[in-house]
Image (cartoon, rainbow, N blue to C red; front, top):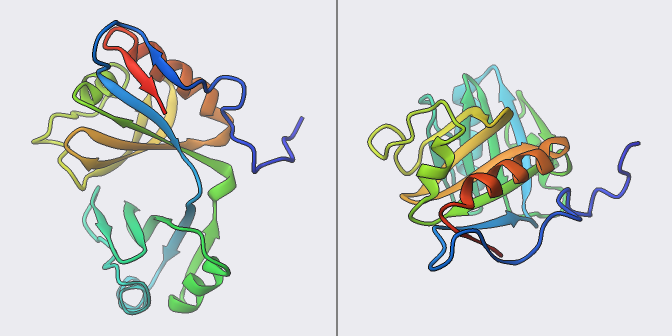
Length: 194
């Protein structure tokens, strides 16, 4: 049955705050990132779209594979040629503002269809490497890198925010599967849920 109450977390019933796994200092902190907007932006006119977005929103959309850019009010993740995932604070008519800024583009609000989990701490890369085929070593996947890949058997977008901090975005329907995988993988290091 379709969940018509999309304002409720996709992790309701499984998300419990506290410390779990190995005793001692937790290797990571896990949290759900809520309250922001996720926009899917596609264009055939990359140069015009980049100029318009830079002028109105203060972010220079990245054009290199697997890179991110941060502006005044948003973060843009390159997800393919002429295609970005935009993470931003919610604002009235945000989707319309983006569409107006980039007239030759398609802007879709995908906020309620996705979930963003944050993993942060000294063991974050080790935990993600257990189920991700990417090379997550800091020299191969530095701060500012992003990629679409798998964690466990779940399709995700990985955004490296800092040396030991990542946002993992996936479809709402896969939230509980991803959460189960991440908490299982983090148990040997210990983890805190916030």
